[in-house]
Image (cartoon, rainbow, N blue to C red):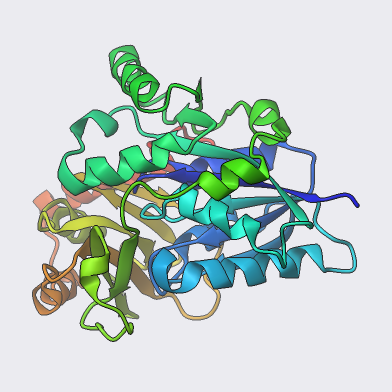
Length: 361
């Protein structure tokens, strides 16, 4: 019986997993099943990969918490793709930035699926500029992810220096000596190598694939009833989603996101701005780096802002953050010359990031 191949894309928060997945989907002629796991109630990453012609079937997994829901949901998602009338023969799983690939790999020794799928490879993503700066629990989680990888892709090669890539490569060789190190950019990836890998994970290796630390855990801000004790987990996060149908000021929002509290480790979402009401902007925040990018898809229904925030557990001041974001509402009467000058510069950056304009990553 021909088994369905499975590839896992993993990596720390903001490492470039979705960008790599999109590049693979653009460059391959092979029909792929895609499973996207995100940490919030709005699966931003799933929307970013939809519409690719190579996607043979797609499943979005929300609120990824490996200890509580991901294994069962992942098993169901894989089975749904391989039991279709025209079954998927290759599935790519994009894990959330707090997931451990070794724990995901163990899903594939489940007797309900073991004879149906072959775990081909684990692909890790590394932002060369970010990896050397990680400390504490972030470093522990990122290195745990890397140790399970067969390939490690240094992403954003067009936005990092040769020195940064050399330092990151040296760290990866120390942490994951068995992994093959490759590079990718916003528009180019070693697609044939990454998707052509097969047979790298034997049943014995899967059985031995145990996370080095207790799994990460993420829940909605203010929600604690999961039926287990949090001291089981090494990495505790909480997530919160900001929504509004009121247009926001792009300039004011950028300023607010650049001054987020240190407890916030990641934010992303789609934004409705007053300066360009019909535009759908993708916002990505990793640490102190804020990126605005034009999204080619139009709004489905009335425009609205949905921003998902991930923070250390117990340190997310929701009311304060909500007030800061509410204060970014667009007021067409407010600007003034200084505001307009700043806005013009801001939209130049948006245009630079739009398709065919070669912007930020």
